[in-house]
Length: 588
Image (cartoon, rainbow, N blue to C red; front, top):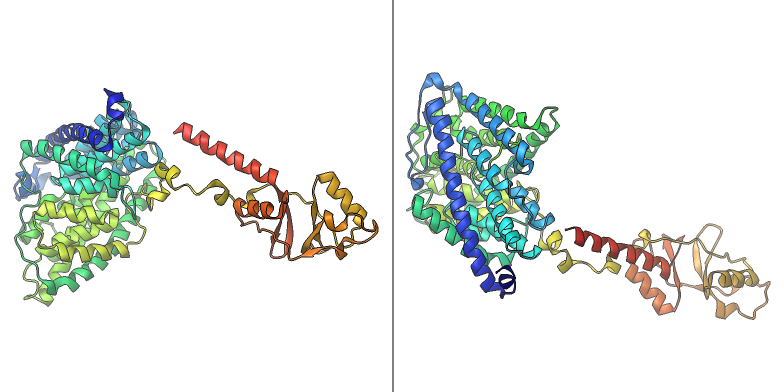
């Protein structure tokens, strides 16, 4: 079957593979979702005695209940969850640490889509424990990594080519995320967009649509098809477009802070001289201390986003802070809590925290505009939704897919014009900062496409990398000596260089043959002769030699003679580079 499948045309092959990947991603996401709720029940409901809001689109309620006396147990819950997660990950699959999506992107670009099968159960279990115990993390990263692992394993079982294995891995990323978020179109786009900062993988869209729709259908049959954040019923008002543009600027700046904070704290934990499996426990404990003042940052936070949409601010809780100050600080606290929970090596995603941060940034900006322009901004729901889009589009470098995903999660097209403006601006403002460090700028920069975009070797290699020979004569050298040097080196010409090593020109055999042996070659030098610099390409050097029918060319830098390169030295460097490229290709 595998040989027959590999030989099928592209669309037929990926119709079959897309369905297969979608089925497996759908059931794997279902197992993960159920396991997450099991651990949440064990840690949060039973151990802590708390119930925090869950989005209406997932059949949850927006009630927040807790026993004040048990609140101190929240950090304990996160520490236990972090320790269990760390032990499982660092014992069985260290590559499953962190937010997962980045590991999947790295496998696509650098590992030919290879993911060990053990990553799949480890990522499902460890992430369910981290999030279920209250860790500030999302479901997207784990789903992306274990679904990409499914794609890789299926490709190996079917003995597909390395190219198809990479595609299967990327399609798995999109199918998993599209399934768990109930966003099949957005998931398909995400599969092609999340790999790059400034590019798309167009060949992944078709199989991504197949796989995401199948996975979404399976997941929806079990858990319902209601959009995660319900239905937004507001109407579009073009007068608010400048306000959305300003929100885009702020989102882009905060996205930079998110990336810097996450990797700054991650770097601190990496430098800690402690066992790796202990670090998620410490990070979880520190994040748990934050939840004593800001319980809203626990888990994915989707229920709190719903409450912000509906402006039910009385449901928000802090033992000491007034609600407006609480709302103002939530984006920053969520950044810190996520950096501690996941940056310490805990297992969970950064997408859901990104949506939370963007939503509450939008809520804060929306409240300001509501007080300034109450008739123009009667409610803040549009800013909450567009804040989600603009913030994570900038942080994750996924503008198109995030616009589509949040549109699917709210089931409304009314905010598209404002969202597109805010996203375009935030994406621009955030520059090259990305929460996914394994992203490369474009397809041209990906090792997966090296053969397609490879600059010819002779153009890429520089003369300065080549072996050079210091063979020269001076203007005062006699014809007799010059002819002997030519004969000894089998050259028909020589570079003429003065006592200050300045390149003067070339003396040719044809011009001095038969001349007085005691004449000085300075009388016969050809000035203005072509030469190259150390920065010139091998191709340029080769062309000069071919044009002048010479076996060498002078290397000159700012008028100073640096030696000569020969056809033999050029060919030696070229062959060495080709062998290195061939060996690398075999290894991968």
